[in-house]
Image 1 (tube, rainbow, N blue to C red):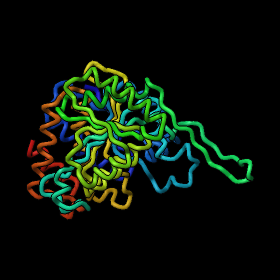
Image 2 (cartoon, helix red, strand yellow):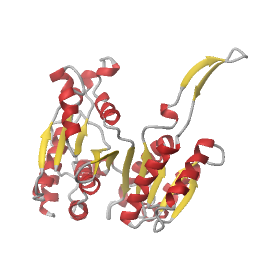
Image 3 (cartoon, rainbow, N blue to C red):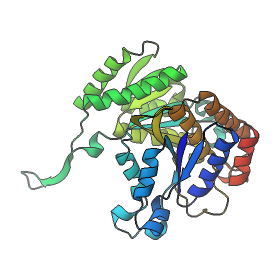
Image 4 (cartoon, rainbow, N blue to C red):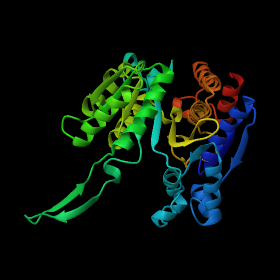
Length: 352
């Protein structure tokens, strides 16, 4: 079990250290950890945000545990030298095309959600977002039309192979968890979405045990904040997934509890290669103060055990320990509590 640990900047080293301690507390046989530089930390040491040695380490690993990147001292650098280019480079170089983001309101924390408590309690979904296609990566430009006005244009497209591979990821996740799958599109007006829906239906035939329904994205946004309990696994494209995942995350009440995974096509001896990270940033304003909530990174490590190593029991142990710590009032400052980074990590380990 070879894991590349890339702590990054700001609070990244603090939260990844606690996640690593949780992994080590499980006593996993054959666990080997390597640490590399990324982001601003890498720039200051190597002159680039993603050094070749870090990329080589990532390629040789079975999975990556990533902290956060972002360093205010690098804000004036040319774009290709900024810390954020590290995560973009890793996704591109490693062929990561599927983003998995759970959104769950834990018991006893419904008061943190902007949603009404009876609605927030039903929020427990997994959003599977395609990362490499759609309008973000299509042709685009600006031009002057025949009337002399400036126009901006962007091309939205998906190839059926792109839709098919992300659909398989979502159906496998739904199948493993025993959950229904909702495919979100805009097939009533977009040809891209019509192809998306057609291919998803074709893939669904290979997963007869997974209930599938389709929903237009505008309705999906409304349902996420009014009837979140109707969702299990949500499958969608890059643009719609970007918006829906942030909407669901905001409904949770704190980004300090939200993990994520980015998966590729490469299969290792243990499972699917992936990169796992909290959705929060580097938070330089609290870096080094022991205030950061490490739970999102710890939960990212649980996702890593599930998706890249097939260790469902161990992943569930971590998730149960996090839920138990929260239920016992082990809350960071982001949740209205006073527990620090190390105390939260220790509390999770005690409950394994």
